[in-house]
Length: 100
Image 1 (cartoon, rainbow, N blue to C red):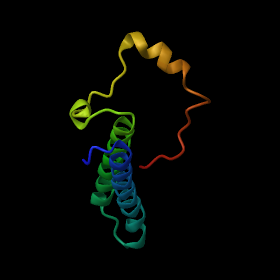
Image 2: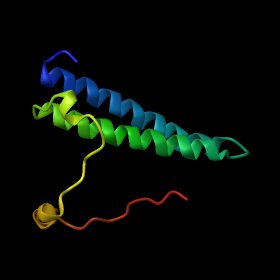
Image 3: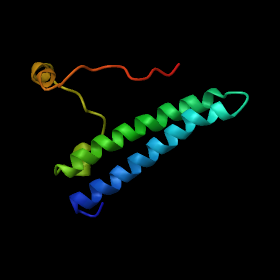
């Protein structure tokens, strides 16, 4: 980390995009192989999860949080704030793709 929040957040965003690219490749590539391998599915899920985590952490860095403050996986919403959180959801949440 350089200490420049915009530069650091942009670097993190680019890394997250690389995880997305890898997940997309893992999703598409088995269709080009005659015998599909379940390991591609696992790699797709893992890379997608890493991408989500890095995207979220990039937003935290962009908004001034330090790496030490965002270390870990405590990205939960306290029960007393849940109604306020739900009120800020715009539109419907819909499933756009199911991977079986």
